[in-house]
Length: 359
Image (cartoon, rainbow, N blue to C red):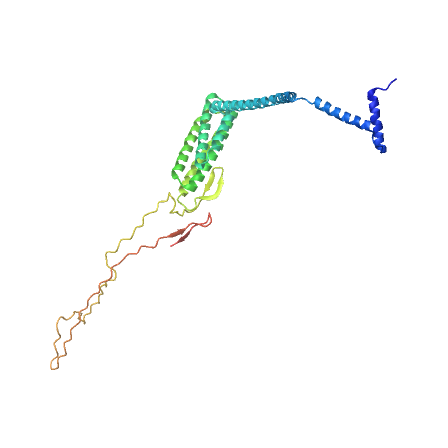
């Protein structure tokens, strides 16, 4: 049986490798065979490589498949962004509608909490302290109106408790902030308006007590007592606005406490009224004029002044005649009235101490 050609070649290659290992130089025919083998491999490699058109087609196919793989992720990202924007828009729309519907909500209603949240947001967007105080008092006025509506509807006791608690919260916050502004910047008219407002709200609550549940009447009474304290507080602070010391430096639930004791007026206060300085009227009688003196009369002494020369005595030499000098009155200087020096008042260096008065 003959040996196949490929086996013979493999065997020849093996022998040649052995010869190379042993150091035996290759024969010429073996060298030619190796050259032919290398050339055939080169031709086979060049013939198996794809041409330019095939390479372009393969590249386009790979690029298309990659594009198809990325397309779903991009579409998914756009879809998520669109859904998020739609959700935000829906949330804002529902929030605006809900806030609009909660404007007429009463204490105890499901939307009353949203109404209070809207009021808190309005306070957060207000930066002036006086405006914040006015908003608190406005919300307190709304609570009184809501309590009136609860009495008409015959609401539960819990609704009254909620409304009265929120009323007292807004009342304390508004009075505390407004009195702080007044004691810092002045403003008697603001305190007068606050006192009038407190009296009106107390009258409104007094009309509602009779229709409220018996369990809530104590809460109504407590709210009216708080309003009476507000009126007293405005009166006390108003009387101290012209003083150096307006407050004690401490505060309670209604704000700063007015100071007590003597009021030393502050001329720099915008509410201070400085009395005019009145100069004393000059005296009609001139000062320094000699007062008349009287000599007690005697029976033996003649106090009359002679008007002519004395007669010389008989038998003697007459004395020389000496002229009597005439006395002239020196006019007194005009009298000027010097007003007293003004009082100098230095504000206290430490709050709570009396001022220093020089004069």
